[in-house]
Image (cartoon, rainbow, N blue to C red; front, side, top):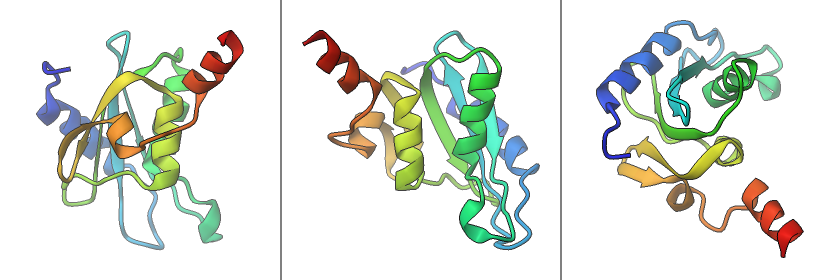
Length: 134
């Protein structure tokens, strides 16, 4: 995915971030990703007074992915309220892995990495498929 326009993807993530509902943390987050069919999906965090049930931006991104036809994510970025790149939390890395194309790339605080680099030895749909076919 050397041809990813990371600046444009970050702009889309920042637009999503401006729609975040973050009255408790005051930490808005936006995410954007390219789908294997060329679509761009995005999401923002949605907090809740019962803090544990808030949704990360990656959750709403995956919801939009599903609602708009599914597919596999091939490139992903996430930004904070200042537009700085964020690393997805562990839960969200697993969520992204579930919906990623093999070799999906992420813009991280330490550069471009594959999903397998940010979630090594992951377990998900590809491993279940291997098990079924093995």
